[in-house]
Length: 138
Image (cartoon, rainbow, N blue to C red; front, side, top):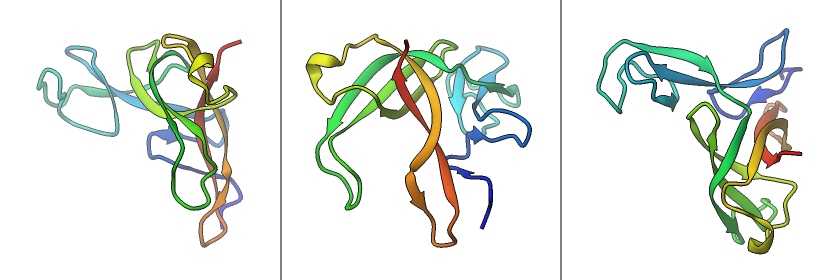
């Protein structure tokens, strides 16, 4: 069992001596940003010009769905969101600290990325996980 929580996705980095962050891959030719490691840009087709970048923690809500049915043990309703980060990356995650009511959710609303416990879940080895969420910017 790890004493430090594990990241829920491979593009979340948890350095020993700093704060967690999300890592993207940026094309050196067209500046497109993607999640997950790659050698070829799927926007312009350039090969071997992808470099890692630390993604922005600020963005705006592009789209969302209020989820009313999910896997057993997952509390509903929750807001599944797609966010355009300020650096050009697009990311999916859960929007928290907002009532799951369309009257209270605005497209384009400014949000920030936060890192928190992955809802208390642990794997069979007892490891805990760190996840990322979106919340409205103050």
